[in-house]
Image 1 (cartoon, rainbow, N blue to C red):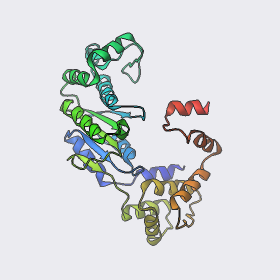
Image 2: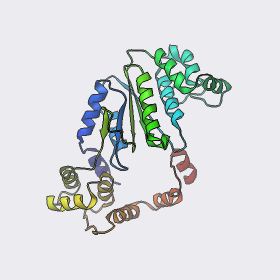
Image 3: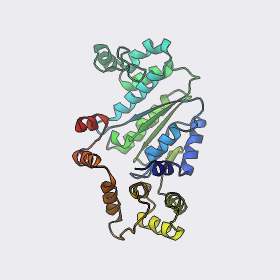
Image 4: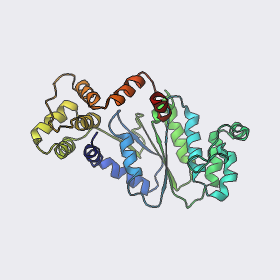
Length: 290
C-alpha cells in the first residue's frame, strides 16, 4: 500500500459528507449512515472526525458481533462519562457503572470492580443514560459515533427503536451518529451511501494513473459497478502503475487475488490465519502475531 494511493483514496469528495457535517453543525440527532459493505461508511465517519469540526469533542466506538441492544446504551453511557468534567466524575460513576481506579482513555474504565457491577445491576444502562444526560453540562458539545450497529440484533426494528430512544434521551448539544448496513429510509437524518458515480471513479483513477484515458476509467467503473472498496484495492495493489486488463468474469475475485499477492508475506499469513474468524480486532491480531 503506497502513501500516494492512500491519500488519493481519502481525497475523493462525496456530497454525503457535507450533508452529515451540516446535520452535526445543526445538532440533529440521531444521524444514521448506511449502505452496502465497502461503500465507505467507516471511512466517511473517520473523515468527519478528523476534519474541521469546530468546538465539539468526539468519541467513536465500535459494536462487535457479540454485543446486544443493551451494549448500545452502555457505550453511549461510557462516552458521556468519559466527557464529563472532572468535578462530576464521582457522581457520574454510579450511573455509568465504571470505576476511576484504572485509567483508560482518560476516563478510567474498570469492569472488574464490585461497585461497577452493583451500579449496572441497580440502574441498567437505559436508566443510567437518563441520569448521565441530566448530569451532563448543557453547553458542552459532544459527538458520539457508534459504528457497525447492524451487529446489535437480528431485529432491525428493535435496533432503530433503541437508537431513537438513545437519541431522544441525550442532551441537546450531544449528537449521536450511527453507521452500519441497517437501512433506515424513513429517518429524516439518515444518509444512504451508494457506489461511486462514474465521474468520481474517473477522477480517482486518473489521479492514481495519470496515463489512463477517461474511456478506460469508465470501463473499469462499469466492470466494478462503482464499488469504492474494489476500486481502491485495484489502485493500491498496482504498485507498478501499469493497470493491466481486468477479466470480464469474476472481476472482484481477480482484484482480491491481486491485492493478496501484493501484500507482504507476513501480512498474507495473518490474513490466512484470521480468515475463518467471525470478528477481528486488535486483541485477536496481537495474539495471532505473537
